[in-house]
Each structure stands twice: as structure tokens, then as C-alpha cells.
Image (cartoon, rainbow, N blue to C red):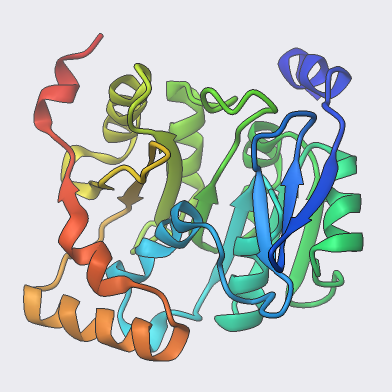
Length: 262
């Protein structure tokens, strides 16, 4: 484990769980919500920004959604993991540094059991990308790496986003990443993503009320015309009950002006 990861592991926060109105929440030593699960519908994605993390589905043909492997960097309350593994039926790998988060997800958040279609790795995300990601054909990489203060991503430099890009299938691999669109670091983070993937392969959704902005980046994806995107959105809504038409109304290419940032 690299020195940065060792320092992070030595200061891992306490993990707590709360419940309110039929929803179970994950916390990392503060009242901030780090993940959620509606107890009666564990495969449904409860939080709006986590739903938007699935906007990559619009960039894949409907018939190919379940192909390849989905990888989550940062387990949270395992919402994305439950969805890709349980609803999409994709081969899925989750990478999480904090063993207490893994334990909480096993006990309280319906984490799947490891098996042929699901792998769980306790590791630093950057270490995993550099050492183990090449063993997988990663179709979708979903990045949600925040600490207990939830102020900015804990991995957010140019080398990290280059590693994310290189880990993806070079013919159509997709990444979605959670950033804070109202935080001063958003433009700099988006610029680093655009430099790693190419500006023409990067898009963002509008911020949520809480300020989370999802960026989608791709490797060699051809964006279809509006009619095909609408057909895909209708299919996603019908099959998976996610607000894909709403995503289409709020998605836009990254502003080229961000590349002027140094």
C-alpha cells in the first residue's frame, strides 16, 4: 500500500447506521449521509445523486447494458453494487478501503456474497487500479470516493483519472464520477477528467439540490441521435424505474473553457 493510502487507512472514521421512515443510512463518524437503502426495496437506488451515477446507461445500447464488468470504487451503502449485480445482472466488483464499511454493508445493506459474478476487494482504489484492474474487462467504472467530511474526492488528481481511463474497455468503456458541482474544486476536477478522456468524451449532469454533480466520461463512445437516446431512456425507465428522460434534459458536454485551467 502506498504512503498516502497507508495514512488514509490509519485514520479511517467510525461507521454508524441509522434508520428513518423506512430508509437505512450509512454515516462515517458524522451526520452526513454516505449512503442509503430503502429497506422494503433494496435493489432500488434511493439517493438522487446515486441514481444519476447510472446515467452511463444512456451511452450504451439497451441490448448491451448487462455486458462486461461493472466496478465501483468506494462502496458507500452498496446501492450501486446491489443495482449492477442484482438488477442489471452484471458481473460486478466493489473496491473499498474501510473494513468497517464492508462489515456494515454485509450486516445492514444486503451486500451480495462473493462468488463468480461478484468480487469484493478491500484495497485503496488507486492501488487496485495500478495492480489488479488489468485483469478485468471493465465496461463501467463508477467512482464515489469521499471521506467522512464529504468535502471533496479523496482521489482526484490527473494520475488517478488517467488510471481510470486506462482501466476501461477501449471500445466503449464508461466512467461516472460523483463531484460537488458547487464546490470550488469542481472545474479543476472536471478539467483533469477531460484531459484524461478527451473533451469530446465527457459530459455532466446538473447539480442536485445538495450540490452533487455527476460527470460521465467514455472511451471511444459514439453518441447516438436524439431519437435513439429517447428510446434508450424509455427502456431504462420501463425496465429499471430510473428517471432517464430527466437525465437527458440535464446532461450537457463539459465546457471547453475548463481546459484553460492550470
